[in-house]
Image (cartoon, rainbow, N blue to C red):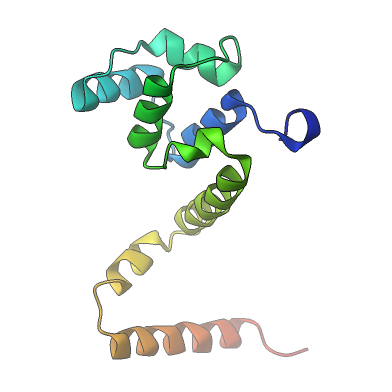
Length: 135
């Protein structure tokens, strides 16, 4: 969902990060505690809620950097709409993989030799073709 003239708000971007983080979504308290404990940046769960809901819309660079680090995205995600679009595409793919139950397969395949990955890919292609016969 885009704001005015295709520009994405901080609230929209933060909401997408929460939704992409998994099910269940992390609580505001979990995120705030993680940022305070992991990065030493003072931030409250209420402030994060306010940012996500658009009640506050002018966070400091320190808070944006801390939120970006917590969610594993570059701070440019919040500052550059083109960068946000690229990252959203990647987050969408990860979400679909997780929803499809194939994330574990993908993670395990990353530790397999190139030849092993070719074999996995071929096996998946064969299963797909058996389940999707030509019309």
